[in-house]
Image (cartoon, rainbow, N blue to C red; front, side, top):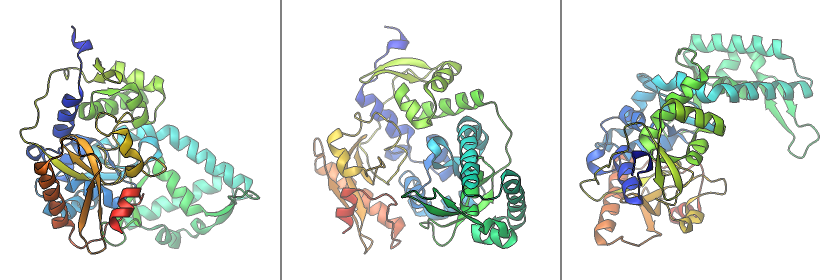
Length: 394
């Protein structure tokens, strides 16, 4: 049998996940930068989830808050910006240009056109006016370093202009120029999310200019991003790749060809790994447990999840939009959910008890104590609530 036909079973895929996603005890990382570098992207639409995802993978979780804040807002080694599927992620800063060229430009053109169309329908000022406001706002942001939308409007009052969206429709609303424009600038890779207002759990944030980066060729950037992700998450199917990137299937196939990806056999059909990655991976030295947060990049890493998440668990662990909530893991598969109560206690529930004995329960409880140890009394509520999380936190 040739390498291109080698079969990857569930056990081997779970072993890869444990090691490459820095979840097994001996594989845990030394810094948030190392976590992000291995995982490529951390979901950033819920700021607290970024810290929880990092903390679950650090050898010394006591440093989670200080070190993640340093990497994001002082050293700027990590950046929170729009990426795949029009979603906010945290990336290593050296991937800014790759993410922008591979996924941002197409969405950005569509978002700017949509904003101008909505403004025209409302009788608001035209594209030339918007460009003036944009340039003024970016200049103000450069002077300030970081600023909220309200602070930028002090320097550029036209950001406060409002226009009616979808007039006469049931979903009619009033939009402020600053809200829509900053969103477009974010997708265009001109601004990124900066330091939050308040603690690390706050969803309110300042804006900052995006790190300077070269403009890359789209196809080359797509090949680079897909290669990075496949090294961390392969083997993966074409459907997984299309879902994670949000690209057209033609873009995925072109990128696979460009990196010389190798086809392999999976239970779901044909999968792919990067060139030279078809060899076997050893099991982790010790059994492992993990408590991963809502929107964790491992739980959300693949579209086809049956090899690590039983279909019957999904109604309890996902919200109606398909966002995963906090999950409990044992040896590479999801076995339950967890939550934090008002008094800070971390509570969990097993939903799949197959192969989960006393040793497993003890390991899971140790992870719950480990999590509480660094979170302390900080209250962390997922932005997207799921049935089991709501029940446990009550």
